[in-house]
Length: 107
Image (tube, rainbow, N blue to C red):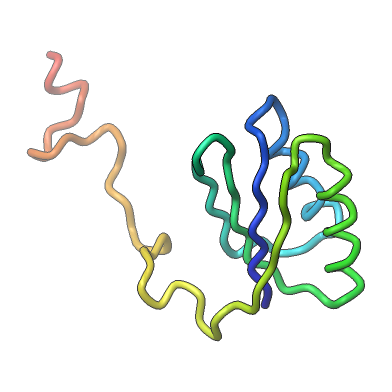
């Protein structure tokens, strides 16, 4: 597994072009984290890639006008050991903290 760190200027569609380069190759995206970083923005992607795919992704990401830097590093064996888990059950969005539904509260 590789972690890719990409810095880019936040213009319309830049993040989608970065992600489309991955999805076009049919790669699994187990983790994506985007955030503001100083004047630019950054996104970190965890991908399982071979050296050929890695070269293709670097080339395509650098061809995007608003991408300023691309780097990668080896991922830990288990990504998310200390991070949040997103697989657990989530409460319904219409339910408030006291257990009352939003519609019942308005009635």
